[in-house]
Length: 458
Ligand SMILES: [Zn+2]
Image 1 (tube, rainbow, N blue to C red):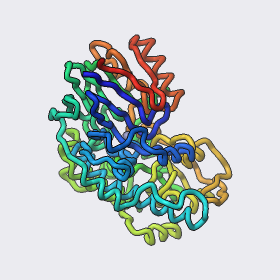
Image 2 (image 1 turned 180 degrees about the vertical axis):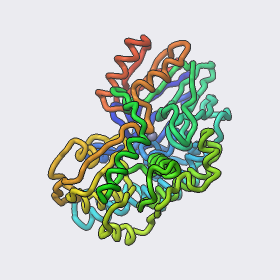
Image 3 (image 1 turned 90 degrees about the horizontal axis):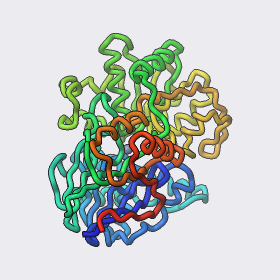
Image 4 (image 1 turned 30 degrees about the horizontal axis):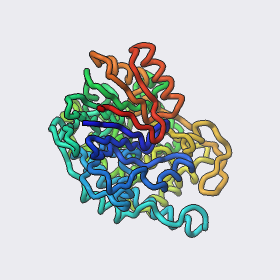
């Protein structure tokens, strides 16, 4: 039974996860993500899929981040007709984020048409995204399920975001490949820890933070410091945040700080329809929660600190522009490369009483990365903006394992995998992780390039 893997995205870059397993001539695509970041990466979304999508027999999704599911509607437009497997929470989150992505694509196309630059048509529409949802099949964790070509597979928790999973895929000869998607962290609030794995023949592992470990600082304490400073100065805190996971984590910590009497009630605006719906899914997904959250979730305020207002309407969002501090605006996207937060930044970056707090990875080419690198002035939507705001970052809030945490997880393997593939990282991070794995564990590994193919079972 021959089996091989071909890397069709997230190969020497952080986004666009798409890995094709060909087992006995049948094709299973693991993840189908959007490329995000620079103009060049965005353009990759317009290239035809490397194989005809009608020749793909199944899709397995590891989690609901856009760089893992965001290309699905396009795959379907281009001819994919089969099932899209995902955990229940991933389906719920995709139901929110894919139509939102379609809406954003339509808005961008309209803007491009109006300004006569860029592409005047959307990659896909909101309607295409809803159509995509019909092909989703929710599967529970730990249930063995057949794959085309005679393989069996199951999901186990990945600890990255709600619904995130590793796919353990067993070939007919008994060997397995572990598609680990994005690797989460141990001892974070809300969701369960990543599953400890001690054996696999083949391993695909991400390397977003392959070259650095997260600081040991307590993210709650860092958040406390930034928020306290803003409240004292009466300023405005703008927090670009990923709608899925990060926003809920921030709300969770603020609630906790208020419960402990360390933060007062203050105006907090979650200006993201998607984050609002996502928080509801987080509150109701009890099977995903770790022990602490299960207990606390009995109280509604877990993700709803005092002073919180959800903003859905774009008119309401614009009204925030005239509002003065102290207040906090949490809005997407997390890398400020789109979404309502761009308008808040455009409006507030030139004010010295503004603090911008980044809470996650900022990919090359994004507005977030440019601000963190201290670019000044900065260009936003064709306008030059002076940056007088204070720029802060909490690294400890990442949903991805840092270098030391990836290594801790890898050290659980009792025997080395026959081969390890390092994906989902910028080249420097990938090389650093590869060097460390080889030095410390002596494993055989590769950093696949776009469209590289490897035989797994001959
Ligand atoms: Zn992810």
